Structures are given as C-alpha cells and as structure tokens.
Length: 79
Image 1 (cartoon, one colour):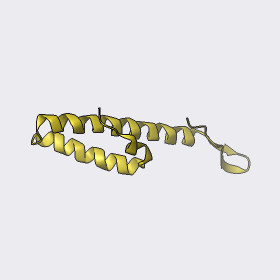
Image 2 (tube, helix red, strand yellow):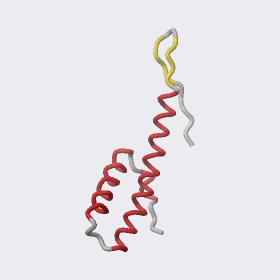
Image 3 (spheres, one colour):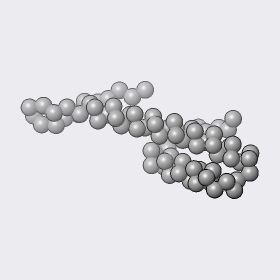
Image 4 (tube, helix red, strand yellow):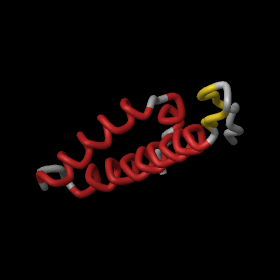
C-alpha cells in the first residue's frame, strides 16, 4: 500500500480537488490497471480525509451557541 501521509496536511479544498481529478481519471478508463488501483487507493484515503474534515466542521458548528449576549462559540474538541 502506498504512503498517503501527505494527505493529513491537506486542506479540505485541496483534498477535494485532487479527489475530483482522480475520479475523472478513473472515469476516463484510459489508465492501465495498476495505475487505476493506485489512484483508487489514494482516492479512498482522500475521501476519508474529506469526511473527517467535514465531521470536524459539523461538530464546530454545533458548538455555536446563541445566548442573551448574542452568538458565541464554544471550542470544540477534535481528536
């Protein structure tokens, strides 16, 4: 399995852009089988990274509180 450690440092937007390129490459059907497998594995890692970023954003939004003093935010715990 390839090393995908660089994905952890990517922003959501960077990971999504690369994932979209991979989907396009796979949908074209032009890549050799071995290349298709490699990019599919990377795509799966990028998808998981995007899902993690989205979940963190969802949790952060849920921490926003509307109180008598207006809107405030509580820090969210991310693991």
